[in-house]
Length: 320
Image (cartoon, rainbow, N blue to C red; front, side):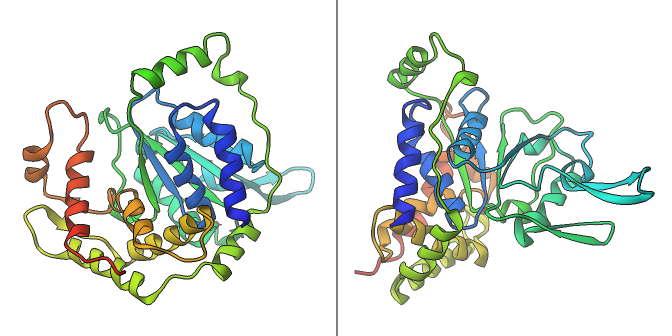
């Protein structure tokens, strides 16, 4: 299966140079093949940007990085009309959104007006400037990064925009063995010296193969919906549950995950594997619950959110 070949080649290239990020790389591959977008969250210095850039370079896709700041305008990413003096007419100068993979670095530092400019591109695969609509090339994927530790000068993404990301990939600090391997890898070379062998493949063809060959049973669909309904019940933990878009994203992601494992059918294990990255940014959790259930040693509330998601999944019997 083409998707499985693509993933194996990506892992082969990434694992030797970016230490301990195999699952994160798998999630990026799933998002790309499922026509989704991903947001990578974690403290500075854990290779968020490096992973996104390397992922695009390996696939030989056009890559553009946008460093969002508070003074960046929507036209800086969508493009704008410029007057050509020689021709005496306006022409459209395309912005960085017109590429295959767009890295929106530190997306929460962009003002809401600029953040909202990404909505149409992420959902409709087009941008509209001065009443003129321009289609984006395929494949197209937005990979955003954010550092949740620093809150000064940031603009938290609204729920409507967060819901458009298929995954929130939470990247933690490496353990002692992994960090030692990082030091050994970059003892003489810098990140800019990394060289990857590129993969000459057709992402669109891989997507079409997944749509036509991977099946998902009615029982698995009902299983997904039942879990989503559990998150929507009124409880002390959750103020707002998952949207129907979350169910759709989870179904698509599960089909791709099955393809990466060489299967032509989806199992309950696919659903359980992808529940946390699909749901962890969509649920609005009661702040009091998070304060009571977050361990003092933790920087973020990931484990408390995971417990809520696991509880919702455990309350539903998986199909056999």
